[in-house]
Image (cartoon, rainbow over all chains, first blue to last red; front, side):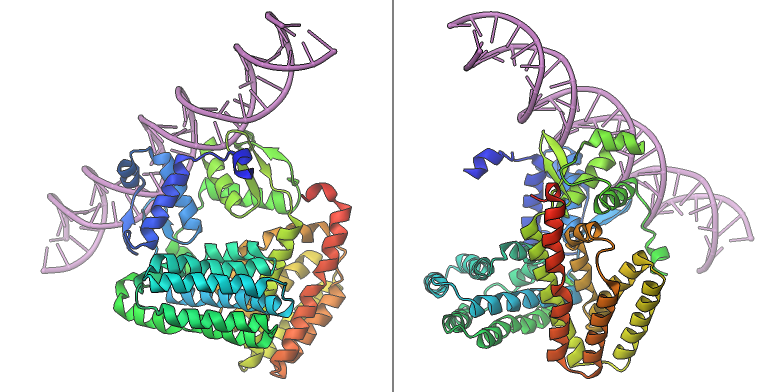
Length: 224
Length: 224
DNA sequence: GCCCGACAGCTTCCATACAAGGCGGGCAAT
DNA sequence: ATTGCCCGCCTTGTATGGAAGCTGTCGGGC
């Protein structure tokens, strides 16, 4: 397996990155919280050096704000940044769905329907975490079908802003509705109708706008 | 000025980042070249630490590949990565131009025409470097007019892959033709015709495809 | 009461030393 | 001649001490 050959060992800095990112997305570390290299180093029982490198990585991903010689704070969520992140995502996903619907491969529709079936199972079991994972897989699969899986990876990097908002609205979002919209998309792909697919995708992504405004008024301190 | 208030001082690591990135984009450091923290540190007369942090940043931007305990190499250009980077750019820029042409502000067309005039001046003076800058400014201005300047900043991060290719083709690209295409775009904006604007933008971005294939056969060692 | 400067305590930044692992050449055994 | 191991040299990773700089506080002068 490639994984064995690559042999990219687990370094301490990477572990710290993962741990911190998880803490931030799950709001265990709240926007505005100030952290210091020494703090985190002591908490994880490691030296300051790997923590520092983790800070740099997370800062580049827009989750931390390093103020030189001053402090490092968990970046507050920028409403405008979230909107533009969604603008980017919508731009790319619309282009993706057009391609997929425009040049459908044999099994594209089939793959999507099986994914939707899994989502219905997760929804019925009330397993929202699994549903979230499957939802993400649905969109990533579309990217793969369009031959631009790397593009999805880019979305993923700048999607963490959205993920923090999503975490705040956990349970609010209706899985039933999302599934229905996924079906609309899959149906347009099956019919090889790019225009309909684009409409369905835009409708699917548009729902988030309302959630954002609601969230801002619910947690004003987390936004700038 | 915000710059003065922010007072973000120039740190050594930042200088190293800028210097290395410039070296990589201008092919002073060629794809496949192996560099080491000690090397660069000695070359710039600094310690290994800031160099190491610069490596991390550049690795996250896809310009370097850090192989733990082995070496750090200038990443070779991935043809598929370039294509997908362009896919991303096209997706976003098409969405941008649609918005600009769909809801044109009073002075949008005016701003664009003055920019094009500057480009003609640079082209006449045979100042290709200045033309490149103005070309980039043209596209960034469109993003600003659409209210998503941050989105352009994101493109900028993942555009360095394209920039390396562009540098290899310096002088090949026809400024005259680019200007004509810019005029088409500006005209569609003036007429508030989103469909025409989209067509013009796609045509404008499509030209690069040919250049890429040509470049790959000219410099096979730089691609993976 | 108000202003302003010295200072203590914090932060991130940089330098240096050491640790851990990959890689290749030389050497010995077969 | 070939194979396999060992060891020095290289790399990146981690630890730690000190340097540079920001911030708030406390106290003295007005």
